[in-house]
Length: 210
Ligand SMILES: [Zn+2]
Image (cartoon, rainbow, N blue to C red; front, top):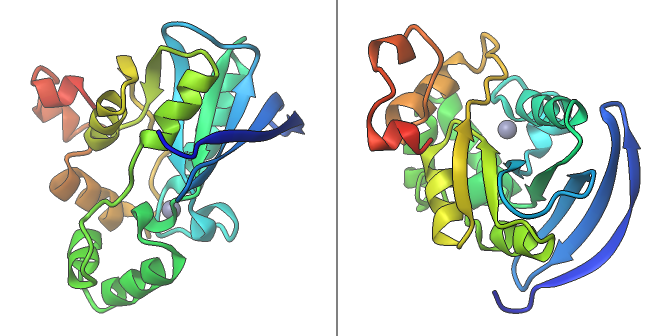
């Protein structure tokens, strides 16, 4: 990708153990890699995570971003090697202001997909070019991706990183986020936990790819 650079790195002790933090910039997106050990080559345990100020900083119950991020850190803390790529593409890539506008529409009864479309955006505007560039820079060629999102798998594959395995990534729902998670399942193809999953044996291409 163009205008992509590694700009800084340091050690980062956390509640979840010791990581190394590496900062990257591209023309239109900033990101970091939170690196456990020295992962390289094939089959690296990986989470691609997009920024969510409302969930991660303020503990919003409208989504499951913070529990998903914490679960990824917990999982990596039990491994010798792995990486979380954190991308500053807030609100599925529409930015913080538009995300709050979308929340206001949801307060009036739209679901998360309807709200984005009403604001003139796709349901999901994220892109994974920078994530793939970061993984390549770290010497990682394929990943075991912690996600329930088929679009993320597709995006990463299209950006040139092979996904060896989809690792289901359930962080649980609050009473506030149940409707949101249901929309992710119904409108965006996310794989969900039983009983829904039990009724749809995971044999389709799409299920395998999520
Ligand atoms: Zn969120």
